[in-house]
Image (cartoon, rainbow, N blue to C red; front, side):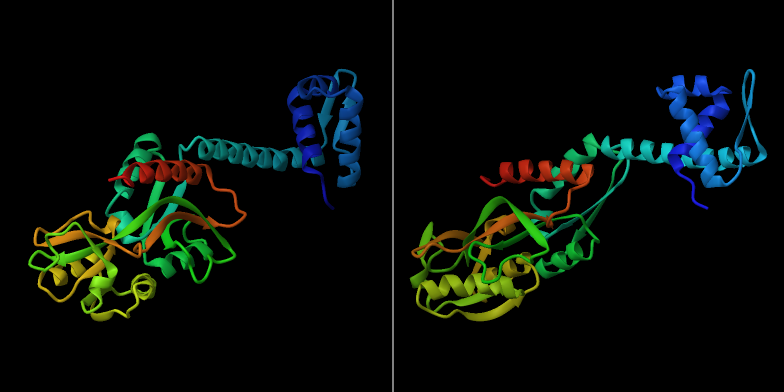
Length: 304
């Protein structure tokens, strides 16, 4: 036996109003339509659900059983609508966001503060990871959005299941110790760095950026130290272990004993700071609000 939920809810209204006429008026139906709905529900139930009286109707025992269960369904549907209204109004819910460390340490705190000020009821969860880790978190649905980066001309495009939106371009700059022969200059040609030792942050993607810049200048870099963070790379530059080509976004905390130069001829690589999410999926209301804030905050930060 299978009963139509909409017809069950019509029976609930008949029970509340006590007549087919009053139920029809409440539901904006005709009396004939209400009578037809009840008749079809009785066919589905296989037994009478109402008894027609001169002054209205009463429920049979079977009718009272149907109404009792239909009222539970009505409460569940009402609760679902209320929760959806809260989610749409950003009064509740959870947003899971992924980020790379350089974003976490630069413009992300401003975006988080603005989001919490406007939507304090939303539970915000942040996951910091490297590039490949963020892609995995997105594809496994552990996060809804990720602020990440990719190369200007990536050898491999983003995964087919993901899509990205440009926030801003983050140029690379050259770090040298304050005692370096080039420290007094504001810019340097990449060709002049042919015999320099290099420090990089441990990452295949970061190494690919450096290799591309050096290859364009006609040489292969000699890497003497692989750092686990850009702060560690700065420390090794300061003591003369080598020079480093780093994203400008990583200079949120710059040491006093190193200098920042612009690398030119050929132009050094820049990376694209992007907002990524699963392709073809609509963002939640919280995700849409955070997307707007991240783009606004990131683009405001970019000139600095």
